[in-house]
Length: 71
Image 1 (cartoon, rainbow, N blue to C red):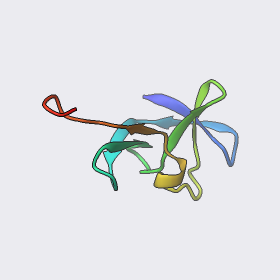
Image 2: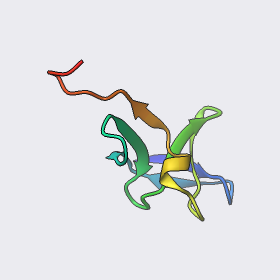
Image 3: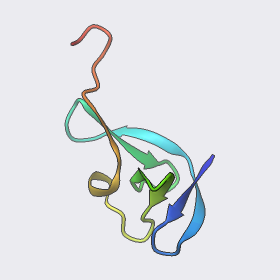
Image 4: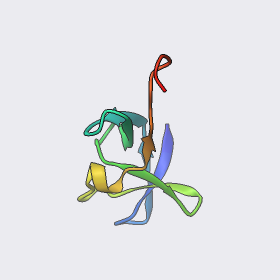
């Protein structure tokens, strides 16, 4: 597991990063498997908004994801 800074409490919290395919077919959202909240990298650390985080707004995204046979 990794830790992320909860932006509401400024305390480290354990996270289990996962990638979620939601919305556009070629975009993955980075989220915490424990809470389903989006995570993002800023200031040299992972961050999370446990209180009222919005996955599509908060999560870092991996865009232009294609299969091996696609361009």
